[in-house]
Length: 220
Image 1 (cartoon, rainbow, N blue to C red):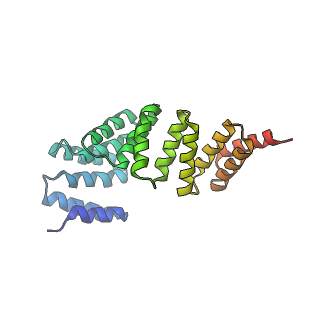
Image 2 (cartoon, rainbow, N blue to C red):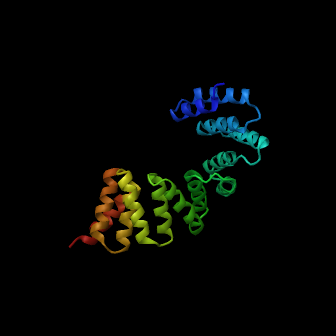
Image 3 (cartoon, helix red, strand yellow):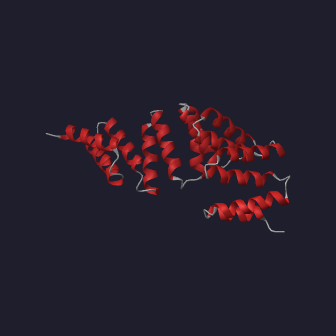
């Protein structure tokens, strides 16, 4: 028997959403009691912006198996996209409790807590996400932001530098390094980091303002 879920996942990773949906639909037809097909269809629909249909699929999966962790994760991503961060947090927590202990789940739970202005609670989840996927530049950057919010400045600096090492065009990482050096009264270094942010993203308004401010401070 063809493994339609596996074939669908291959199409999904290749960005071939229609083919992915066709395979996942066949998986559901052949194994209607298996929640995986519904979860996979929901994931594709959510990525395509069909959020209500996606939620229906995730709920169908949970009707079949109330411990289907990936369905809670899927519902959480829809809530997060809708800026319903408290509901998103609850769903990601449930997914973790049920064993979905991957980098994405930790990251999304951490981000939900950050959006709820709870950086101290977000910190361990963002740290775990960065540990589980050391090459995820965005996870490293968000961990840096969280550390900066909590005034762990030297640690934040380290993660912004790691972000740039992985993604040299990450303008916001350059900008935040500029902020840190300005905070430490190292105006020359701050100016250079703001300039680097502008090189990466010429319309970065905050970096432009920061660079002008540092140039005024450095003027004789």
